[in-house]
Amino acid sequence: MIIEAARQQWVKDVEEKQREHDEWLAVNGAAIEEWNAKKKEYNDNKQKLEYELKRLQEDKGFIEGFMAGAKVAKKDKEIMNVRIELSRLALPKEPIMPKEPVIPPEPALGGEPEKPDYDIMIGRNEVFDTFRSLMA
Image (cartoon, rainbow, N blue to C red; front, side, top):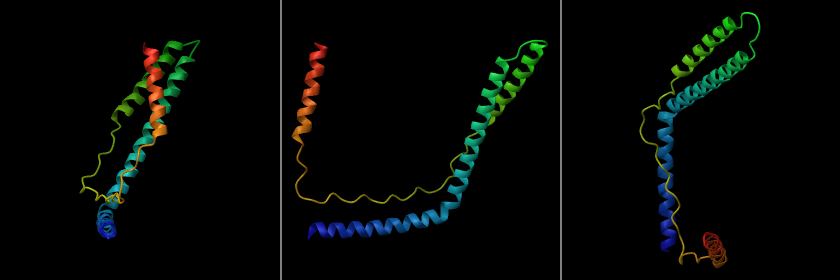
């Protein structure tokens, strides 16, 4: 009887929290989607710039021959510009919104606590003994 009453109360609590969560999502869903889109754009731009930086550094390593110094200086300038762009990237800030409601976990229903698994305990003791013998 007590277990069933506790379960029914939990079901009511879950339904109430789910309703609160749905209301919260209706109000804040657009802000969350916009924030996720900004984070994706940030990650895409960062990945693109890091790839460009790596490519430029590899190209710089292959410069040889006539006017190599001028070509290296030009690549250095391009590398510097990409690094500046990377440093200017800013991770979008999380929008300010109320805390998301948390759905309560199901209560632990049952009588006796679970008994320890002695096979696992025996295995653990064997491991401890092995380590102790290695340390000695």
